[in-house]
Amino acid sequence: MLEQLEPGDMVFAATEITNDGSVPDIPAGAILAQPGTRGVLLNTGHLEEQPNVTLYLVRFEDADHELGLPVGCWADELTVEDLGNQAQPAAKG
Image 1 (cartoon, rainbow, N blue to C red):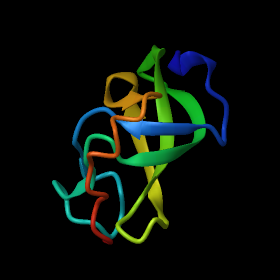
Image 2 (cartoon, one colour):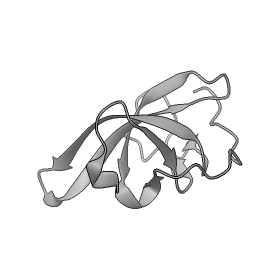
Image 3 (cartoon, helix red, strand yellow):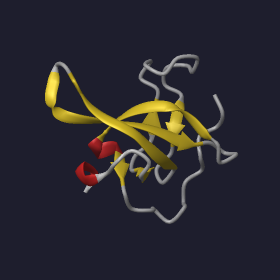
Image 4 (tube, rainbow, N blue to C red):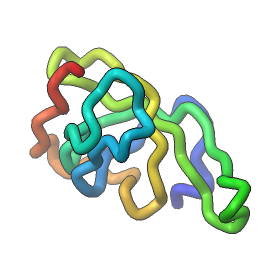
């Protein structure tokens, strides 16, 4: 169902999402989203090295319900299902 999403659609973190070093000004390994954290899809794309795999650009809410920095996510890291608001949003970076 992720493949049907459009920019502006709501998504949720399906897993704990951490900074792999690609998000500037946030330490590598920092938690960007806990499972269930709500986010908004900004765009989709592909890496040149993996043209058959979709990359999702998402901004997740922080503890103050403000959108954080854009984060690149793989399909298995996202869901369209609300996980029951069981997550604690990521702390501000």
